[in-house]
Length: 397
Image 1 (cartoon, one colour):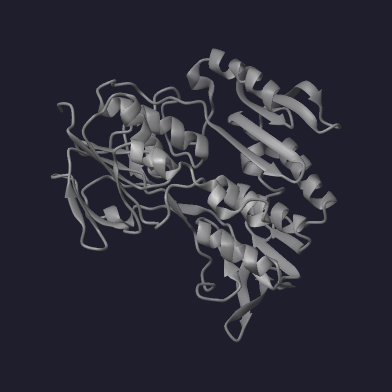
Image 2 (image 1 turned 90 degrees about the horizontal axis):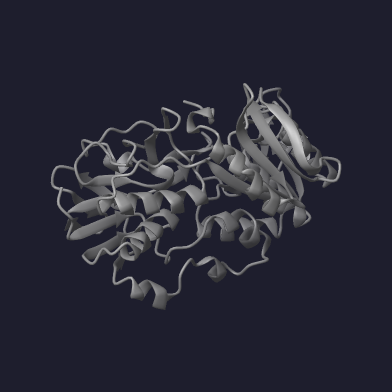
């Protein structure tokens, strides 16, 4: 395919904005359009569960770029108009308003949406957290709530529980794992995180299943566990995972399987179409597996790779996975992957002081680095992963 004269980015969050910026930075001078489902200018999502939810930041602080910076991109931003269809053969996108655009290249950056809890839809007091409106609405209810139940013990659920507890609300965190974030941190660090939550007054119900949400006159009043126990609640937050926003692509002809299926260059299964960010499931050549990552860092890094490949660089995207989380007084960074059966060595600091860097190995090869309140040192130890062969990063298939 020759150099494109026009690019349409579908999705105006971090990945979409970073793609547009990367294209301009790499010299693209053609027509550039960004189509977004939300009415807001691009904003950052990680602060939603922390600074915005706690009230430490006003909502406007999370805007990624000012209007002048966006104008300098010389891009058309079409906001508040979700995409509803894609004709992959002609690279034509249509939006809910009737807006339609045919283009040389389409970049899919539609992200993810929260997985709902069956039977809880429409009940007052039941919340998910993905958008700015979600965070503002939840914060408003937390201000008057006495008891909150967070269903889901992954990154988002754990962060929400920590923030809500910091506001003085009685918090119960319910999850199926042995400890919060066990699948992301491994048993050792997750155990320390669980103790941190308990020390700050969060009630942990580990290995628990939720049968249903109970209500009275259209408002939530509790959560019924699989054991029959009912947890009283003024507010329930559902954080049980997410699904890629690909429903609008079902008739597009693209291959969809837990995201938009792509090759190692993040190209979808039709010419001139790419995917980036949370919605992209691409072939990581270093590990020989398909991978989809849901985190802010990947959104930015993958956007740069996609922009380069659109402009002819033809390079595989082979990142070292990375994410971070802030909960109570713990700032945790993770590079690579932390398998449950990995050998763990504290290489700097002290676990008892809660300032340390841990190196994770499988079969003697470094596979992950975890830092707890030592961000600079953690970045230095990341080099062990870079020096190791890429295929040593043991990732789930």
